[in-house]
Length: 317
Length: 286
Image (cartoon, rainbow over all chains, first blue to last red; front, side, top):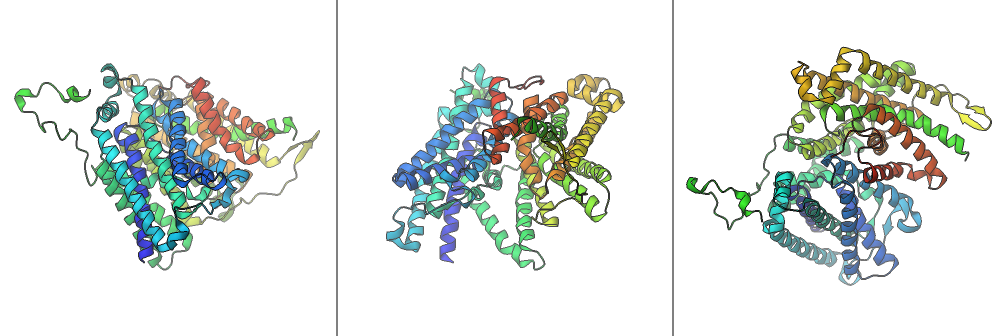
């Protein structure tokens, strides 16, 4: 049981990291990434291959995985950055699907649908299974803490303010002299980099990855985390990820209690529950558990009526 | 393999692909959003046709009609109940909502039918051969169905009052509203026709092979590629785009492994968006 709880805590941490990355893309910059799982897959495969085949140190492999995902993110972003937002949705979705096709078919490189096994974990042999999981939980918590800190700083920095300005009205931001294209690309690269890092952390934890691991459903889990926690703020991303993992795991225990369901029906029912929950939250656009705070904490919360005319755009430097 | 054979296969596959691609592009033109729920509607159509064909023993033509009807009705219902409120909230909400919807519907099909592969009840026929080129009678029938459906659709758009109203809303919603066209009613018509075509296309794709709950999702990349290459929002464009993608996917097997066929769709999207984002016949893409 303890083993299971630690594994779930690690999963929640990885979802939190993905949610933080996606929050920069979606919550802050207002772009849509339907291929979350593709970038996670790139990070996982790059790090796994570099450590397995070329014997790179694990930390270097993870860094390379994050970097690879961010570079691919820039390329994908570049194709559509000037077009209607729908095109980014189409391209990211197609990208994730292509990652799955390539990893399933390049047997010489990625071992096809059988996947890669024996991916090294840091001191896995020395620590033994139990201590390794605890140690890895420590690593994941540390990484999420750093990512949270960076995301918070980013959010309240001039960079973050410009992103939110772009999200709210691209034209206004561009009239204010901001080079919208570069800001969007940077946001996309940072976000997809975090996704790649989460993928690499996953690969070195489970020691096994296969194309089936990176299913489109994961993209929905991350969107659900953000919506549940409160889109546009980082604490919400963390809380939402924990809530989603709790929800997913409880459906895993509740669904088998219904006796007349087959295994496939049970799995289908779980996916229906998850997607319908997402639809309901999306439909009644709730602000989530922690709503986004719109002004910088250091700014006066509400301008008095006499000074109400200079609007908040003054803060968007 | 013979290049001519590949081109013929590509034309057949492309013509079938054109049917759901028209559905996607028509919905985009009138309702102005990319409906990712298309994938599950293709699956629903394929399974509706399967039930009509295998459980009720209907021949292929009525079964294809059932696929159109059921997918169209589900399309109207899901648009009214789920997607319409999202459209007011912007494209990100709509995109994510339609993906969630497609996964929900796909799993409802999975809940009812399970994951196993199913085949239609088709007469077993021998392929025709001309100078080493093989053509299956079933493929020719599928091609004929696809062409007839497209001809009917073009006639509908060109000659009927509703069809003209649809084009008017697509062309200029404000002017159409001033002329007293009810955009809501037209929206329901386009949801019905668009998703019906997706369902019909899903069944035509399934007739060639087998069906399972992922039938629609697997075809989605090629369908989107067809619509984007032709120009999102242009119906003749979707037909041309589908032929380009269909032939391209077949010819790609000359240089790439067969399994990469669906990645060709992604490459086509990337290529077109880089060089000519509005596609072959589209209006604009920004």
